[in-house]
Length: 185
Image (cartoon, rainbow, N blue to C red; front, side, top):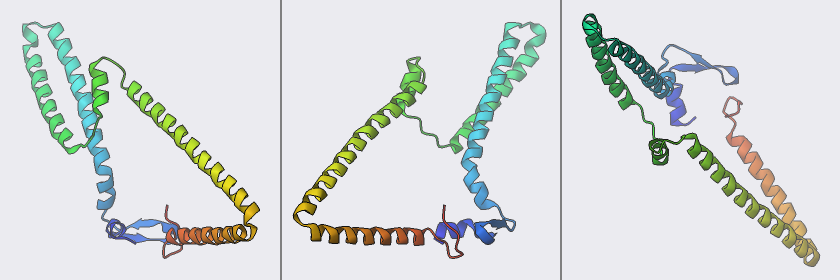
C-alpha cells in the first residue's frame, strides 16, 4: 500500500475481497465528498437566490404601502443569501474556459463549445489512428521483407518479442495484485 492508501484506510479495517469495514472515523470519505458537497451548497444557494429574486419581482410589481415591510425583508434575505453564496463559492474550485464565457457573452449556447471540442478531439483521434495504422503496415511490410531475406533472425526476433510480451503481462498482473490477493481497480 502506498502512503495515500494508508492514510485513507487509517480508521478502517480491511475485510476479505477488498471490502472496507468502517471502524468509526469517516474523515477519508468526507474529504473525498467535500468538493461535491461544496458545489451542491453553491447550487442550492443559487436556486434560493433565484427564488428570492422571483419573490422580490412579485413584491415590487404589486407594490403598495402595506407591502413595504415584506419588500424590505425580501431585500435583506436577498443580500444575506448573496453574501452566503460568495462565502460558499470561495470553497469551490471550478475552472471555466474563457471560450465558454465569451460564447455566453455573445449570446450563444455553451454546448457549442463542448461540441466543437469533441469534434476536434475526434478529428485528432482519426489522424492519430491513421498514423498508427500506417506504422503498423510499415512494420508488417518490413517483417515480411526481413523474413524473406533473414528467416532465422526474424524467427528468433518473434520468439524474443513473445517472451518479452509474456513477461510484461506477468509484471502488470503482479503490480495490480494486492498482498491479500485482491486486484487493484
